Image (tube, rainbow, N blue to C red):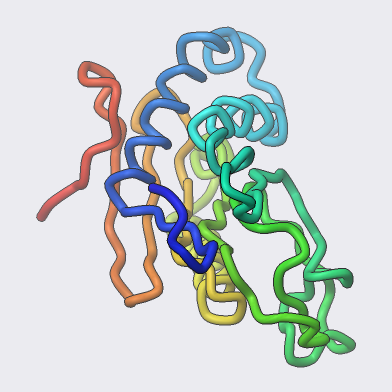
Length: 202
């Protein structure tokens, strides 16, 4: 990962997966109580995980040579200097949105076309596994499609390079679906013995 001469940040898929692996492994270790005893709301998990994930991108947040700084933000609802709407082409018709976690260059891009989107690296939507256990198969499929559509919209409309649907944030089986600008989708599950996310292959 790193910047090119134009100040654009490059992140390979394997680097993203490694960052998520390290951050999730540390979250499991340092915040085990959250997973086994207290069962807090989703935002608590998200905040603790985001803290760990941010540590993987500190070089991007404090670049050298005058490169634009990236930020890992939680529930960031701004688009340029305006609100981040569901449909940036018709902001008056849709409500604003705040993705769970994003890595981006603050102030870049806007539905007002103040400047083009740049350095929108990834968007992540998270779900604890608990709500899914109480759903019927049809409800579960509908919710999972909604979350997947959310990250796909960010890739299409705001040019995020990756969309992460972290649909099972739990001890086992932790899982996320990874979407790319090229239209690829892969499923990654956490291997507790190896402390890393591994691609699930058919």
